Amino acid sequence: MTQSLEQKVREELTLYARKIVAKGLVVGPGGNISAKADGLMLLSPSGFALEDIEPHQWIRVEIESGKVLDTDVRPSSEVLMHLFAYRENPAVQAIVHTHPAYCIALTLVSKELPMLFPDQAALVGEVTFVPYVVPTTDVLANAVAAKVVDYNSILLENHGLVTTGKNLREAYYRTEVVEESAKIYLAAKAAGTPKVLTDAEYKEIQSLESEAYRVQLLQKLQ
Image (cartoon, rainbow, N blue to C red):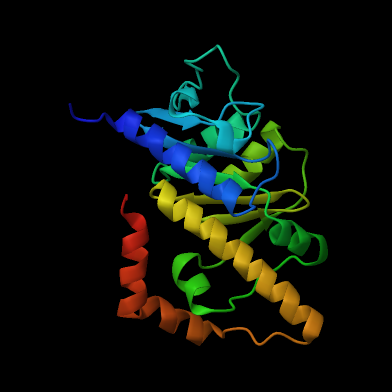
């Protein structure tokens, strides 16, 4: 029997939820992730640690109407943030929201994350910041939605990180790269003045055939 798109997405969500926890990108029941399937988004349920979610437990929500199709468990409290982002940028197919320690630390002391190394330039590009607003509100949802057309990685001050992608794999690896970038930048600033890539160096990396190939790999489903 051919596997349905929805079932495939459920299994991918379960896989990447466990990767997120294994990498220490969330603690306890923190964070939430979603992916699209045939006009729906499948979203993590409220109150679950990501590693505990089984494939059948991802919550179905209609993107156009916002109607929650599964009512035995509530969807993540950040449901509006995911919905608004998908509506604003239909090209987005997956969203990963985590609470990475170095990303949060960076937002406490800086409002920039310069371009530092090739993978950051090739896979993420420019990162933007959203000033602190209370989580789970439509204010936060609107603030994120306002950024998702122009940026794939959004740092939420005093809160965490949101990454998007053409699939879960891409969104997840952007999370890893942004967290590594924040870690490197904080370490470099503690030791001295970081040497960042120039605009010309950044553009050169983006034009390299090898880097374009790497981006294409991340855009493919496993």
